[in-house]
Length: 467
Image (cartoon, rainbow, N blue to C red; front, side, top):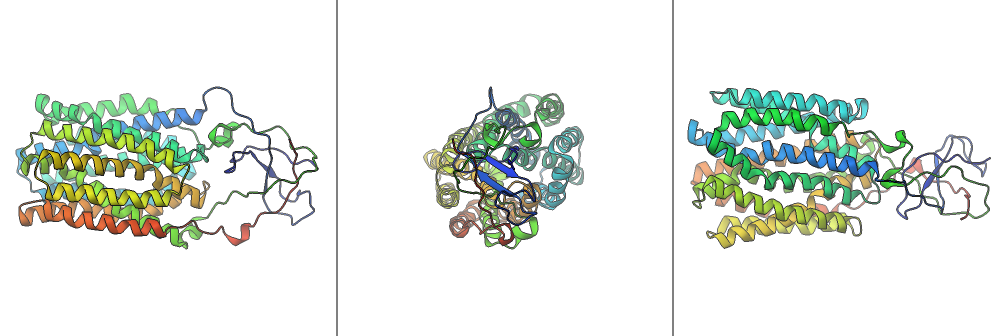
């Protein structure tokens, strides 16, 4: 019997994979086992692969959220502190509350993404995010600020990073790190645009800026979400733009067999790699989240920068991050991702030490280069590594459980920086502590080796067609 060629994920040698239906393997082997055989004929889809349109749309959504909320929040924090006199700890609490929400929402969001599809969930999220901005523009007290911020956080989570990442990893296998890198350049582009938020805060005030932000979320975000699609197999395509062959003939040459491995969430949670990637990622975002909230305030109050000048530093850092993302994607598809991530953690540490103990513009620029490069190179590898290790089938749920670990770094970063700054009158001690933890985080990535596939999914040898 001829095996039918169905859309499936290409293997690492860039050859298409074929699915032999259950109970129909040629060798008369065990029935009920999914067997994936490797052929030598490879075809490319014509035109621009839709996966790249998804990457472009995801980058646009990431840019929108970054400029208006993630990195834009630092500029809002400086203005709100001047108007209401709220402490740095209080402002940090709002950012940490967002991280708690994101972490706790992770598992159910992963289930919703796998159950209802990313496009539906993202549309709901964008409407909630816009409503949060409209509510934020009307606040007059700290509790109202927290409530508005939680609303925005829920909307940003549903429509943001986790959702777009779940889509992108479905559409790429061999070029997954590169695709993730280009997707995350959206964050960098958003960071480069942060001075526009600072300018708007000065020219129009924070209330008008928040109102405009809500409108932009709807006008720009909703059309971009239309490009989102579920896994390519539903549309007769393979990841990376491979085109499935029509048949597998009765050739006589046997080719190597590579089975696509998909861990269940339970199986993934039992591996050392799941936890070590999570711990390393948490220590990385410890640094990133603290700087998103406090960098502008630190530059303004400790080093004498204006709000506009501080946002220019943020733009320079994110431009460097963008270059690092491209490099990280290129290297991640060619070398071990965990080793690149381990090296990047030392860059985070060195950059934060420069910021903590330097007091001139040159030290600030050294920080932007070191931290920006490390952030850029490491960022695309986090989810690409998880998808490489655990497969695509349950990626949303596995990533959701990972978010519970990452949450601790996201929450602790702003709080550690804010509390130590209020207690000591300076951010320097808090930054130094986090730099040390970032350096230790490299150990977790170094130990996060790829887990063995579940034993019950051992591949079978199946003869396939020669060229």
